[in-house]
Image 1 (cartoon, rainbow, N blue to C red):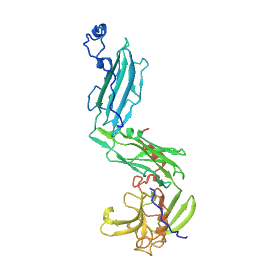
Image 2: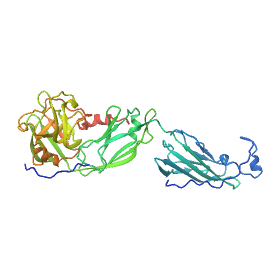
Image 3: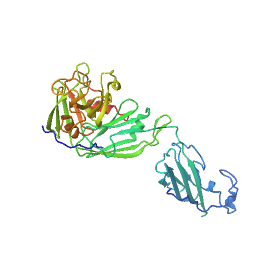
Image 4: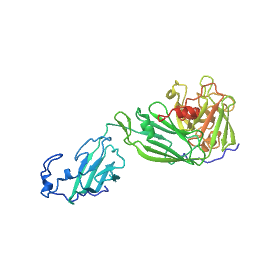
Length: 407
């Protein structure tokens, strides 16, 4: 195998003041249902609040998302309704529709946004042909608690075929179904993609098998105003996408101290490795490259060991699990790769201090992507847990699908 040089890059209002149409003089009216409308008998127009009835009322604060926005007239017909929502310093028109009789208007989406200011302008003509207009405002509830999901991978990244879409929430989610429905993951070319919950604060998505190279994946987060737990509402409403690159999978045989690297199904190289020593073995199973670091510090105390090691300049480090498993360059045990397992659970490749593209570790790093799969076999350890890193490929498809909240 020839180690090629070159470093691969990590994939990585304007609204004018609302216009109120012609305002009419207010008069006194008598009677409720069945009573006399004195103003109408005298040819006087109704007060705007009676001629055009808007709910929620003018000046109301803390309106909850479940309340309905309606505009109605007791008789006649609505000529025009304009509703504007001001949210996050942006003003947008709220689409809606008239009822069949022309006497009522409702928004197409009945749910109000949180932390928003609504302005309603309506014009109507009553049964006698008189026009009236009304202008109201109200504000919706600003929840004390919000939740967001930290998403993997990054927007516009090019990733390996083993990438799993993962949302880590900053708060526990109790209404998993509501949150799950608000997240949509789609692919071109199309493929079935299913969700799986790990605990109450993590939601992952993947297809049955690794993505096909060239697949474009889009993640739509419609979490804003979704109540994920009592009184805790989502904040995000955005979309992002990523591209699946070439296929590369690597098979680490801990017993043989070797790693086979395959590109698009063909054997690219066989690389000597060192895996976990007998007392600190490496997990078996499929692990996905989560992060790539040209150099990093590794301290055993951060992953549950004592003071056995603290290496400030580990080169070509690729994170495989949340618990601290890496595939990285090893310059301190140059004779170990290919011969003996000496690590504390990581997979080590021969390297030099400071790192070099001419070493096995540098060669592999330069040809890797976040999302590539590294599978370990023949280690005297258990299989890595599916929730440890992006380990979901270690779970069968039926079990994976059973982990969704929406049945």
